[in-house]
Image (cartoon, rainbow over all chains, first blue to last red; front, side, top):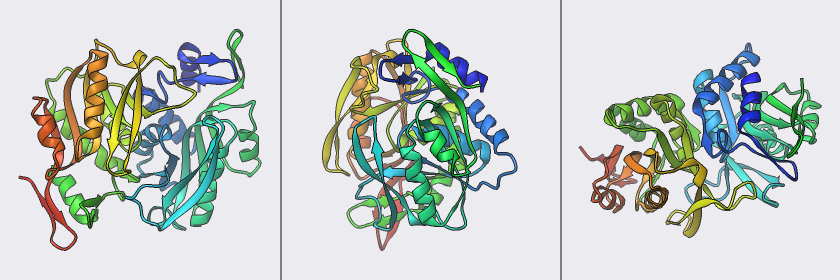
Length: 191
Length: 191
């Protein structure tokens, strides 16, 4: 998606260690007008898919998923980092490894809000190693729901997540795929 | 707002200890069509206010704030729970007491995304003791920005937050104010 690639080139900051900061428009300050364009693009790419729910994970996926949900006319469920006293014990649970934060954490989805009747589009802001996605797919499998597709804003194409997830045969649409990036040489997108 | 009050009556669950579970439509499964109606109501209530930014706090405020931001035509900034290696050190920081989770945590907003030029509408899902709001107001003050108003989905009117914040003279619009609630007797809304 040219609009997103151009925005990443303009406002993204590449840091050593393959860190891409896009917090000026994607995951701290959120440009919701851009999110609306991204939502329209996913709607086009997943046309014909029978989607009745969007699933994402807190925190940075929530804004993008909410705007996408308006476009698709469906509710969002977001996987929550465990453990709040406001949550039931009746949850699907999975464990996610975070390379960013160098730890492991549990996320949960209430069994009330995901089940065999659901046809799910996963939405998330970033795909790198794919650990968060694997966790969401695990929850969907436990719920007996159907994955209709995965919409990612920015994929780090040089990390393994995209390859691993696509090998499962799931339609995954990343709106910008970064082939390589470097603080001096800049960003190369996959065609 | 009748629509929200009716939804709380229909789908909200009152638990002992003044716990109101609205995770079926507000903060786990998110009914974005309802969020759009809430956004329109805030737009009406804050008509004439010069708002150029919405501020909220992760995680459950983000979806509501994103949908409201579309209605207002402005970006959202969400305060992040510290500390990610993806964040600069150049942040406004404040400390928030959580009665729900019985702990204290720091939240941060990058100095790049909030400043003296900003006229801010705060959006959040719940108001009880007001600790999260006090934190956001502290960040806005540190940034030299102007608070134009506060939009809350559900206020627990029997807790102190509403009184304390309104005493500051800030326009605060809670779309449903709970006067009292009880697992047997149900919910009484403020007129």
